[in-house]
Amino acid sequence: MSYEIKTGNKQAAPILWTGDYYNEGTVSGDIFDTLKEECGVFGVFGHPEAASMSYYGLHALQHRGEESAGICVADGRSFNYHRGMGLVKEVFDKDKIASLIGNMSIGHVRYSTSGDSRLTNAQPLVFKYRDGDLAIATNGNIVNEPLIRKRLERSGSIFQTTSDTEVLAHLIARSPKDFVEAAKEALTELVGGFAFLLMTNDKLLVASDPNGLRPLVMGRIGEAYVFASESCALEVIGATLVRDIEPGELLVLDEHGLTEDRFAEPQRKALCAMEYIYFARPDSDLNGSNLHAARKRMGSRMALEAFVDADIVTGVPDSSISAAIGYAEQTGIPYELGLIKNKYTGRTFIQPSQELREQGVKMKLSAVRRVVEGQRVVMIDDSIVRGTTSRRIVNLLREAGALEVHVRITSPPFKNPCFYGIDTPDRRDLIASYKTIEEICGEINADSLAFLSPEGLIQSVGGLNGGDYKGGLCLSCFDNDYPTQVDFGGEEKDGCSC
Image (cartoon, rainbow, N blue to C red; front, side):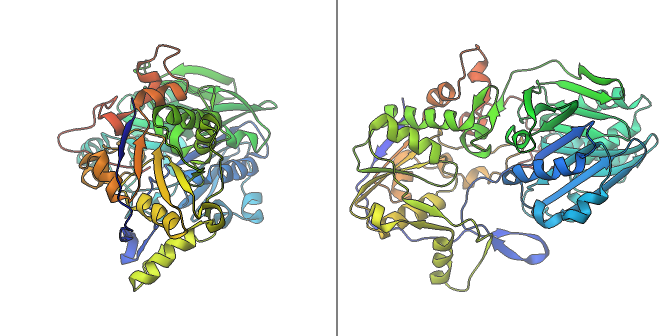
């Protein structure tokens, strides 16, 4: 069954401002309270143009992190790397890429929790240790990192960053074993969701957490191997997708080629459901399922679970367009481009008056008056976090003349924080954790509101066919059923600090 409630509330609710606080006291913020993308990793082994390939791969993964970018290359003897704050195209130019010479590389695009955006945390993190150089790039979050960090600091470790990724380097450096065995031993100490690329002067290691919470795929281009958070990054360089990296798997690439190993036995498979719902690009494939097709199925299933008679269907750009098309196809209601996103506004600074703040909302997203005026609109979106975004968009449609606005969300109610690499608000700020569906409907000023059922979500992404628990998905943000321990003596940790 779906979650649905109707209300007759058509009075425009006030558009409220929710700002985000960043470093050095600068007050700025994205005017929408959407979930923040995680990080993206990209690696190349055995190609003379490794740096250039990493540049294009990271560009394809830019949606996963816009705060910093970095590439580190190895030529068999030494490292050369560059990192910077900003987008990939801002951090790198032709000369910088040309200076990164080597046939092996790892790259990273980063999003962090607020207050933790600084150059020292930009990845790949690069270290000197007894066996030479070590570089690490990761997507995810190590839940038990605070306890490991405290233990290491008590025994003499001096940390250079606030990134949880750094604990892995210290664990490896302290081990008397060779690099591969030390890495395997260190990885077993970590609890959380993570996809790691580790590089020395002559080796590349690839690892995925035992639950496979964070996505990671392997591809080939000629004789070279390529690794990426999403398959769309393989396509852009002409690489062929080989397979997903398995939970608990450890791949070793060196002069002997590829060795398939593992550091842990696979546990309950639990790939983050939000990858299918929101994060991954629609042209990516995860576990054999195309994201665009999966989102269309979500929209179609939403139509079966919560049909409403209307004149047009529109999706909130960009992640909800596929689902909106699926809803329209299932119902026969025409799909229309009722909302337009301006991709060039960037972050919007807090303005001195409410009027200018509301103008900032319209700079980012606009309703197409000639399309929605006089129409009963079904608005498809992927999630509701605090509720402020949905209210703003519903009001935009009403101001453009929509007679009715029915909101359909292609995920279950988002009630719980994520501990595995998504920057989510405190549980108290998640509107579904303390308001009923009826109350949320009134809060966002909609005529009706419905959420996709967990069962509908699982079946839409192709789950249950293989018999995996919950279709091999992590649904903890919806049902509070976390696949790993998340409380370590009160050291709960939200979001992505990779």
